[in-house]
Length: 87
Image 1: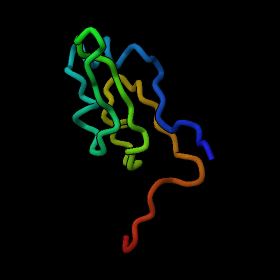
Image 2 (image 1 turned 90 degrees about the vertical axis):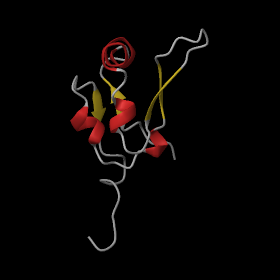
Image 3 (image 1 turned 180 degrees about the vertical axis):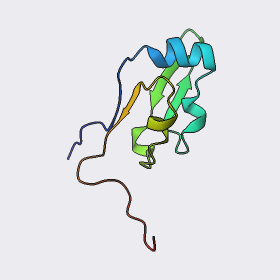
């Protein structure tokens, strides 16, 4: 079924108006799974944020590295993330 989103933003304007404008969108670089992406808008100006939550590997890097603490990461429904064999 449909799960509630496990990645949410406290303020939707921060990624583009702060993180992208001042720091060139660090989320796009620190996420190892490519969840966060900045793409051009229709008028060819960059900065629109796109999320690929299905790519998330539940490493919590975004929750730790987001210096504005704007990304809220919660455990997905039904578990605490991946269960790796042999660990």
